[in-house]
Image (cartoon, rainbow, N blue to C red; front, side, top):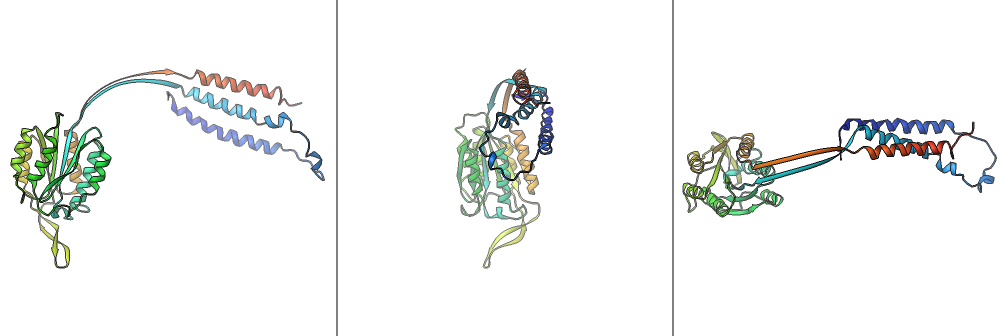
Length: 327
């Protein structure tokens, strides 16, 4: 049920002064008599008038409520909707090498990447999404799933140290491809995020890109890191320290991967730009959706009007019969 004029429901606030006025009137009309003892009245039976004295006012309140609902025009809404969606299979491939602890993002690159990826996942409830992490090696942390709650819980656990340090971009990309190659959907996407250049692994990044192209997988690549110097983690005899070092991203290779697979390359120099990039990808990879909707609203106030009439009649009957005042 919906209301055609819901603004009139605010008139229900009128009931508050009505109730306050009623109790004020009762208080002002109380009669008193001084007697030495009330024990002689203890056995007197209570009349029906005593039990029913508040009922007419209750009926009046109910009458007002029903009339306000009638004015608000309650309606029954019948809606028919036909919707077809074509989901997209998306694998996130995130670099978890030591350089991802750099603090040119807030609080660091890896945490910023996780936070923005979580928002991206929440914005795409109809898609199968999976997660691959890579450093010197790669493994699938979560296969393709629509259980985004489980995926998000696994994403929270991602951190540096789970894999030996290094940056195997080709292996990370190939692992994500392996999870998508048997997918039957028309649109298959990998979002690969890294802050360095390929320095280990048995698969070259461009070789992996060729494989992705063969399977019709589109790859969006994101280079993460400010331009110039950034506070990088360095292991010293005194523990992990941060030193300003030159940011080295192999943008040429990332650009080639994106071009070969009909994707795009993006450079994220801060957290805000990373948000914008994921938003851009979200807009580029929208579900195909066809919706046909039909609405029919029918007034349904008759019941409330009849109840208002009934409550008003019952109030009048009580006031002029059992609760009639003697002049």
